[in-house]
Length: 256
Ligand code: ZN
Image (cartoon, rainbow, N blue to C red; front, side, top):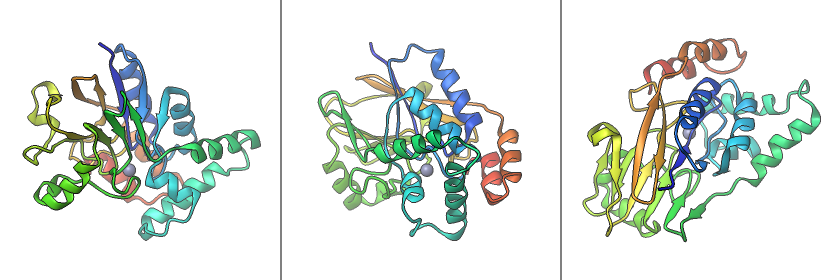
């Protein structure tokens, strides 16, 4: 059975990304896919872009990639500060010109949606309705109108990131299930109805668990994985970045 992995919302957290890639390397994985937000918030945007380009078969464009390429119009002040810091890193004159061009070319080619398995699996950053911007949150299962409209656009399985909260959303009974409610964090795909799977976040988890999150999946199931990484090293880099706000370091320790 072919097993794939998905990483999402790396957010320039190199320590977390490296640990996740190491963990993936211990398994028999055919391909790695990325759901976007490789950069933004964290201290190592260049290194994370290089790793994503090297190891991921494709990556979706996230709102943070969009923001560095255009203007961060719908970001709050602190998030915009991180976007500007990131853009400066990618344009840093100490990096060879060719390499800098490579970053922007890579960003430029990222797609909003991808499909696999004859269209059975859909990949987007946020939601199929508004690919880079719409959030699907656990509380949305109470908003049947929103969830129905989104599920209309799901072929059978849709992989999303963006909220940094891992789990499965079911169409049939409109439920959200966190991996800790699953046996061995594994969920079997229902044969008749659709599901949306949030892959969680590698570099900035927000479900009160600071460990990096990623998923593996086959045609039949998805499994959520958590790995420890050196949070303190990243916190220190953010504090010494000369531009990234302190709250971005604090939230890594708490996973929120
Ligand atoms: Zn994100």
